[in-house]
Image 1 (cartoon, rainbow, N blue to C red):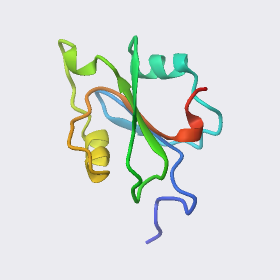
Image 2 (cartoon, rainbow, N blue to C red; image 1 turned 45 degrees about the vertical axis):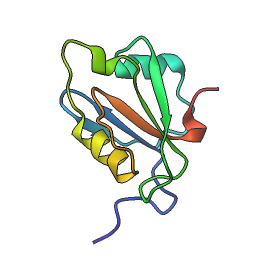
Image 3 (spheres, rainbow, N blue to C red; image 1 turned 60 degrees about the horizontal axis):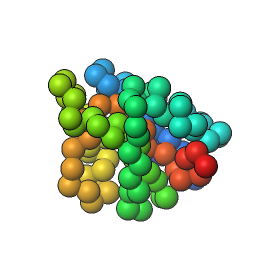
Image 4 (cartoon, rainbow, N blue to C red; image 1 turned 180 degrees about the vertical axis):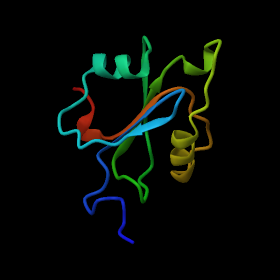
Length: 106
């Protein structure tokens, strides 16, 4: 069985909630702040540097800054598992983007 992670590593993982659909695309252009806000369906984004890990080097987690304060909270099991593999002890709620640092807006 072949390794599903490309030799050069993943570039981006987008996880849309509440259905937790995973969209892994060969994104080559930087995200704009507006693209992130639209995907996450939020006003402010929070960007968290992830420790280097076997899944992705130089990676960042992008989530809704106010996601945990909303009336309806959907835990994102995939994003939560990924950040916990990276050594962070937290829970991700709502949609999330994990991307390489060079895909973040300037």
